Amino acid sequence: VIACFGSDKEIPGEIDSELGEGQVTGRVITSENLPVSGAVVTFSVRGTTYSATTPTNGRFSITLDKAARNDGFNVQITKTNFENANRAAVIKMHDLKLDLGDIPIYIVGHSQSVERTISGRVLNGFSYEGLSDSIVAIQDSLGRTVSATTDSKGQFVVTSRYFALGSSYQLSVYRSDYATRNDLTAQITAIENEADNTPMRLYPLFGGIKGVV
Image (tube, rainbow, N blue to C red; front, side):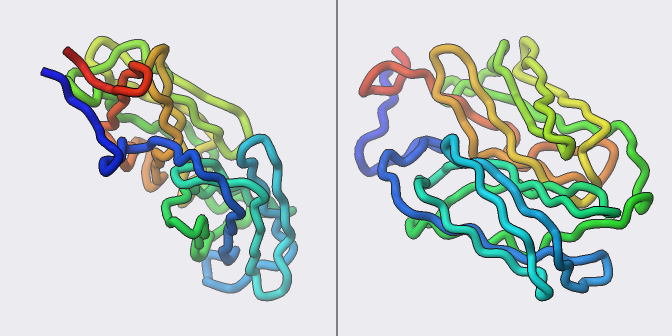
């Protein structure tokens, strides 16, 4: 049996080859829903780093030189006397515009720095079997890349003391001879957290046709 995707089908997470100008917007707020000025918003897309500082209304709007649908990245928010915050970002709309909404940041000491985890499972997109030896990488709120390798059942657990409560993170999942996915996310709401898109599927690369016999 050969499973194929024609031109009218879209493989989950597959990066659109058509590049264009994009836009990322949002607002930085306190835990009391007040706008935060002077917060620095930073992220990188396709090798280019973008940064903006929020004005008194806490809002930011950043234009991307090159972007495509399913581009995924981490947005980091920093401000003196506040804990670093993260927001996972994945461009989904055809107009390449992404509104992150309100992003809360917390005064230092609001939440303890404790070890938190993000877990999930990676499957072969066609056989639905657990995919071992896949690497799941996440950039935490310190800007470090932390990672884990899936076990024989495709399960993983990524650990960091800098997965900030109330933040979200973008996951990159890759394996040799499989299409990399950068459109996966996780929300931090507790000590142990499950990735939003789990179980997540990776698809083998077979030239122009993706499938199994």
